[in-house]
Image 1 (cartoon, rainbow, N blue to C red):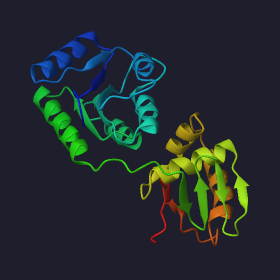
Image 2 (image 1 turned 90 degrees about the vertical axis):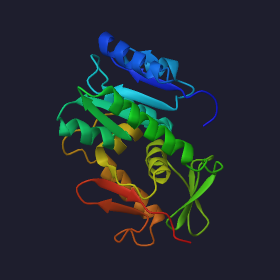
Image 3 (image 1 turned 180 degrees about the vertical axis):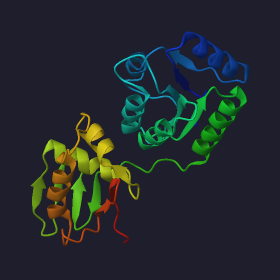
Length: 237
């Protein structure tokens, strides 16, 4: 991580925003503060900070979970810490499913928040650099051409993916060996919220399996995770 550490704080409570900001500044961290997710997104439309603190319950249409999903879809390396209500297990679970790395419950000790920020920044600094951009990835028996948005099938023929198929498959291959929930996949790939009994993702997965699996009935590349969703398993060789 080169240059000054860039930290963002999204908190709609002015007092809480000031307290956290001033405390971090006393310890050498100067976060840029935002009163809403909309402000954060406008400021970071092109480049995201090194780490962001998102309050879960923002007083606007888009809450902290949606903001975390938006940020995570654009960067796998940015650190995300959710600020949640004390004892709210649902908030913590949903926050982690939304792509957050950590959470701190309110009211929190400022020292604890600082320690978690430093730990997350330290992990990011120790992480290996991102690999060179790939233009082609193996998916089961096929190869995904990321530039042309096509699948090169086992027989050498090409299958032009629909926008929804490509977005879903691209999300899966960007997060290998990581279970992804149906809700997160739908909201991130299709940019809409999941509804009860929504089968859109399942139907799309079935179509993709027919194209990339040697035996779609026994998938090896795009596997189901019971009670969660799906996981992409890259080829071993």
